[in-house]
Length: 251
Image (cartoon, rainbow, N blue to C red):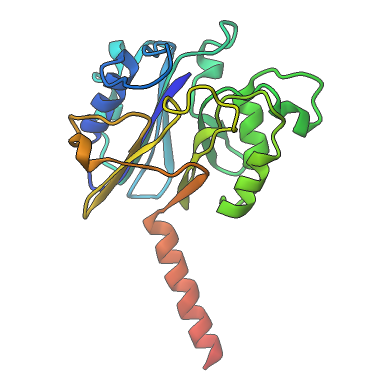
């Protein structure tokens, strides 16, 4: 099982990295799952505010050993997501399995917290090889431009029973999505809860409330069965340009 955190808006990357490290060590753990330490690697994806491209970092070392001294703590960006990992299966460790997962052909990056060993059936596979990668391919089909909440939730509810959670962060150059969903049979719903802290200039969503970022009363629960969308400035600019084009064409 893993921990997720994202920040959008105006923030210091070092603060978000430090929060991810605290979650990885169990410092902020207050839930119903025995797993409190997540030491099987970590990764990050962020947006370059200059060219709008996505940048990725992956490290197989525990976040507690390597994240604070990494370049990620010093990036200047308006969007950063971090994944700290505790591999469900021992054989699924190493760089190949370290999130974020990438799909270069359509520029999506993906992070997953949970275990969905049955989703491969919906891809026509005889057995699961790496559930997070299969979940990525299922939830975000190739060349999907964005995740619309209603259709995404319908896809999630079609996953055969047997999994624990589909919490995920899906990032595209135009926008990012936070997926908060777990099947009804999940035995540790508190562990898979998501929490949101919002100010006038930023939003932080995390698997655990982090006092160093905000006091407990400044966090609110993200409702289950929710898909949050964080549009990027590039997408806003393109939408405005398209709107101007439509106005000119209508004159």
